[in-house]
Length: 148
Image (cartoon, rainbow, N blue to C red; front, side, top):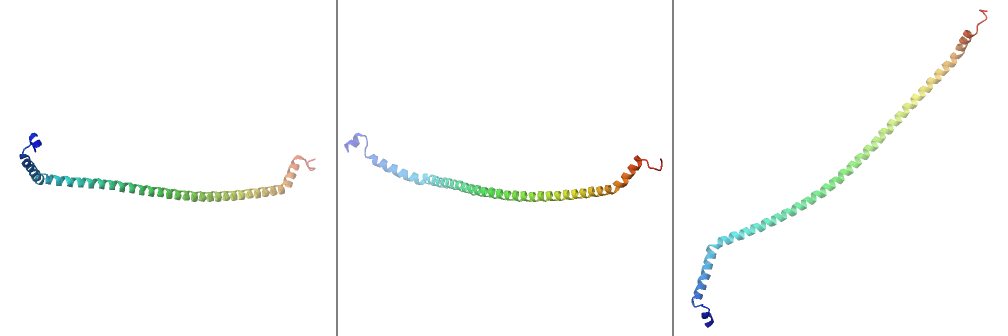
């Protein structure tokens, strides 16, 4: 105890310590209780908000990935439909062009046949008229015995 008295600590230290503890308990119960409760409530709400924000961010990422996957699938499907329609249109176009070529060839053959028929008819008519025409030319070129 002599060391404690040499340090300048006497018996009132225990009273001061008791007063300090009593003051601390009273102040913490009366003053800091509401502050501590508000602080804990705020920490809980902040932690809850952070967790909610993280969960929302994760949901957004998941939704984005789902929509990205669906978008890719739709793009693939649209590309497939486009290719099918293009192939169908190309086949239909080829059919129409082939039909038009066939019709044009048929029309050309008919016109050629008609022209050939007209040429034969003209030739046969000329062949019929050649003797009469020859006699007329000969009659004009050679004088006949009547005038001599």
